[in-house]
Amino acid sequence: MASSSFAKSIAKFRPFISLSRHSATPTPLPSSSSSFSSAAAVSSAADPQSSSLSQAQQKQRDSKLSKWLLFLPGALTFGLGTWQIFRRQEKIEILDYRQKRLLMEPVNINSLLPLKDKLDDLEFRRVICKGVFDEKKSIFVGPRSRSISGVTENGHYVITPLMPILGLPDSVQSPVLVNRGWVPRTWKEKALEVDHQGSEQSSDIPPSMVQESERSSWWKFWSKTTKNLEVNEVSPITPVEVIGVVRTSEKPSIFVPANDPGSSQWFYVDVPAIARTSGLPEDAIYVEDINENVNPSNPYPIPKDVNTLIRSSVMPQDHLNYTLTWYSLSAAVTFMAIKRLRQKTTRK
Image 1 (tube, one colour):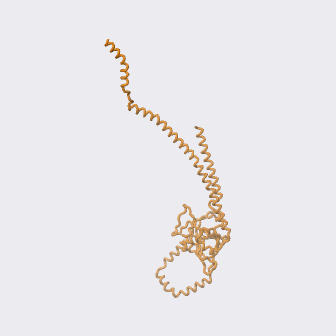
Image 2: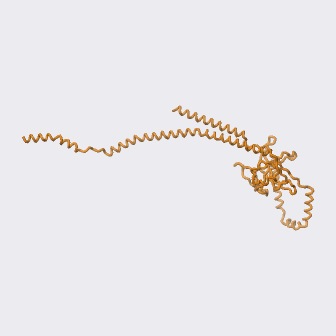
Image 3: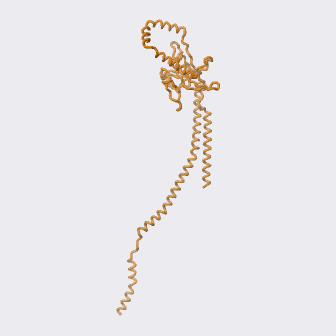
């Protein structure tokens, strides 16, 4: 009886014992290798998406930049055309200013001497000068071409100091540089030959003759002065009247060589340098002769034509032509850019 009762009690407690055993067994944890593999799988799935997004953004940026670059030539040509409009207006004002100045009555240059420091304000003012030319100090600027009867001939502009005459009220009070006009190339060649011969003759005189002439000069002094006075009485100095306009130095382009006063090479007008070479003050006034009364028997130098002073290498009509050209190019390039963009949209 006791054994049967003990077996029954054990049978009653068996389910509880099995449950306690199941609860005591630990649950297995995921391994580290499996966690890393899952993270790598997630990252590998995310990388293609991020790279595709970055590539799409880069393509959008490139397409926008290419669109702007297509319109860049049109914008540049449009800007150049607009700039030509402003240049045309400036040129019209400059030529009108010159024309008004040239229509004014000429004044005596002595009245402008106090305004030497403001030569820019005096430019293209007509003046009258009286004096005598110092031919030995002439300077030739060139070469300058001139068309005569359809034939182009090279020559130079001759610039000569106009010196004061003592005792003449209307004479210039200080030396003035005068551009007398255009002369053939032979004029410069003859002037250089005369200077070369004069320098050779002065160098060929022996020192003994110079000393002898100095010793004998004291008793010939009075006879020389009387002879000079007689010559002056017989052939008095004839004043020269110049009607011209006040000008300033030229502004050479980058293609014009530099002046070389030592070798008498003058390619453009540099008033201070020419005055210094001629022995005049650097602030000497520079005048261009525009006198139209040319002697047919002695036509050279040929003064400048007044109409050339109110002309320019690029006239207002030329600026207008340039404007139309640039605007036409701008319209054509812009039209091609728009057509190109439309082709891209239709392909898409």
